[in-house]
Image (cartoon, rainbow, N blue to C red; front, side):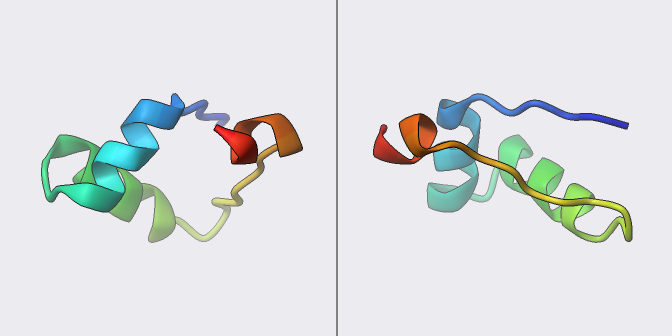
Length: 44
């Protein structure tokens, strides 16, 4: 499964404990989950 997360969703997950946070936790607990990014996204 591929999941694409908007930068705003990731920031919201890092700053607050709402739905985006729970989504990242659920993804993190899956064995096949890997995170990818790009230089352009990291600069945002």
